[in-house]
Length: 124
Image 1: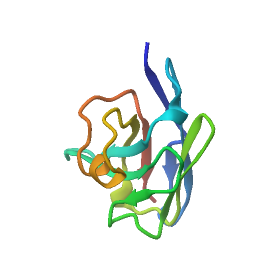
Image 2: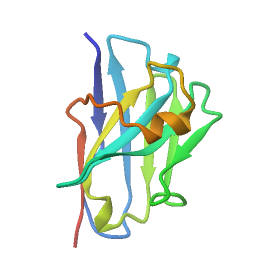
Image 3: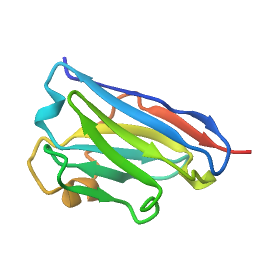
Image 4: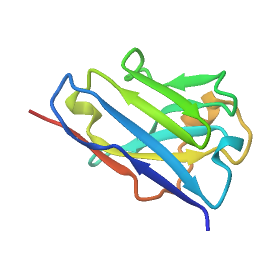
C-alpha cells in the first residue's frame, strides 16, 4: 500500500519557522520527483514547491519564494519554511510525480489525491 507520511506541522507565530518532512511507505520515494502542496481553509489545493529526482530542479509558488526551501535526502523530502505568514496557514501534503513531467508542470497541477497531511497554523 502506497502511503505518504507528512510531519512537522504545528502552531507558529508570524515570522516563525517550521520544517516539514515527507516520508513514504510502499514505494521508493527517492525514485520520484516530489511536491509539497497545500490547502488553505475554503480554498483550492495549490502547489507550494516541487523537487526533481536528483534535487537539481526545484519550483516554488511565487508566494513562498525566498521564504521556503525544498530539499531531499535519501528517503525523505523536506520543506523548510521561514518567515511564516498567516496566509501560509493550511494543511500541507506531499505527493509524488508519477507521470515524469517537469517540476514546474507538476507543481502547477495538484494531483487530486491526498494523504492525511500536516497542519500548519500561523497565528499570534
